[in-house]
Image (cartoon, rainbow, N blue to C red; front, side, top):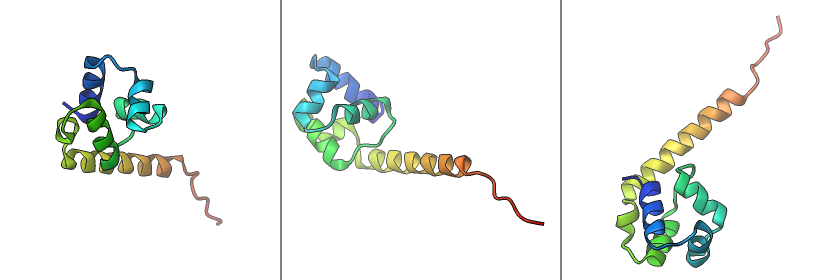
Length: 93
């Protein structure tokens, strides 16, 4: 299971809304929504805060390797979007 799937599963098992889990973990509700959607990578601080709030070990949410890999993938995807969004360079003849 991915970090996002583990996070959602643990939150639902504890009957917490995204807003309530975010509040208890000291995160913004929008951040938690993006984490569950897999749209953003968690920081190690976020993983630790969420794990503590959910009463699990951080490795039950995500391994350090998974967090690093997710950050890398999302960073690369953002760079590709930036390149694709640039207008083409026009050269003078």
